[in-house]
Image (cartoon, rainbow, N blue to C red):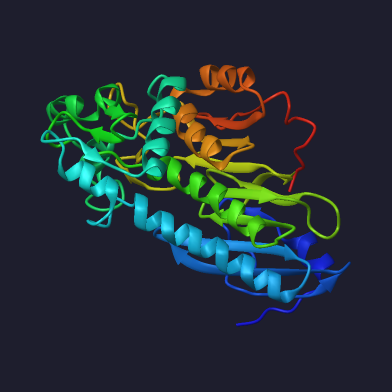
Length: 343
């Protein structure tokens, strides 16, 4: 299916919500200032992936588009835990039994995940899988009792994950443990897709993997790529719009996977201390230079809460945040206040 728009008008309207809905699935190619702009969507990593490419001609645009999608597909085959044949699936299958040799790329992403866990005092935790499965926030909608959660505590201890850089192995010391880099992997995949799109000749563009967005370069108009931050309680509404240039953005929210029972919202972002849904925030949006940083920090800061989370953001270089607390109050980091526009 083809979409036809003038590039200037298209970019004026192309606000990338943190779940992409505008112009999704369309490929539009138009010459403006010796550039073409193309946009296409495919399903990868269990979600909609949308690529936007600014290139000098249609041939380069097509090559860059193909390179971006191929890289995301490659990483899905490497890092997914839904596929039984991936390295991380084998690590999980051998939990409590033996260390598993993995590729350098997988090892590095797990190490970065553990670094993010350390930075957020365990707020970000790739070992939480058994607890998330117990809640089944979008499937069985089960509410585990305290005994069940206490029994899971040893299985979600990220500090017990053993990574050996020399032997290039990962070992989970307890049977039943499992790691899942889904909470950081989409940001990493967006980073990697940008590298491949640039290598293929793209001048600028956007990689959007569900709520993880990475931008590079400038659109033909010479401004940044506009991105909308969703309102956590009003469907279809935005709380703010900002323009990104060579930046990534990611949002964690209690509205993404949840159910309500007896007036209580139960969602998938769990506190590693209690294994209960974290309650201090409604949503956390992080802007950073790397998608892997934005993706990991949004969940970790959601768990930390608005005060401690914003203090962490202010201490980090090239990181900004918009935090909506449990009462719906919005807090914006100091470096972002002059950049936000109202929808």
